[in-house]
Image 1: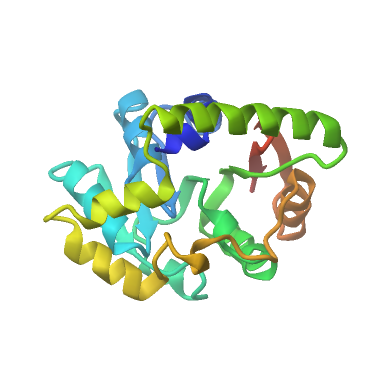
Image 2: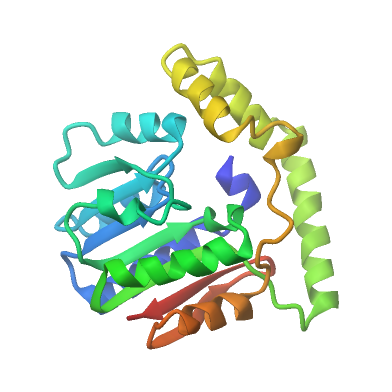
Length: 241
């Protein structure tokens, strides 16, 4: 389902982990922020078996999937925490971290909560540690290029959905019908709302440009920040403490 939305998903994960390894070596202590089902942690440990990962999320359904996937792996610890709560870092073990990573998650936050979160992320990194955020970010200086790429992307999605690929709403319906996941999904809907409904969209005040993210990271005290990968609609930014 995620690859249907983001066909270059594996490429950006590769660049993310290249950057982690380049800056932290083969055995990093990593915080997987808004980890969901643990997609980044899974790839991290396959690439760097000596790494350790702490996954943080608030979604009981996605954390249930992650706990099942990583059961018995003592390199992984999963923590339930609300990233909009200023005290969320109190729940973290193994601080400080060599790297904090996240993907397709922080666009759910409005502008000011995200700016504040960037400051707290800096606070859990060691000196020289790196933060990497892969998310929906655009370059507004190229509107015609963006429009053409978006039209091409939408046409591909429509062809693949017609061939049976699950979209966001269909995936959540399938998960809610699973006998093991039905109860965590019910709690998720109570806590965060039903993502299939009209309130399941992104906030109107969310940042949309790569430049905003780079500037905000520098404002929050990161020594360096830049884009290290992009597509027409997404980018990966890296920031060094």
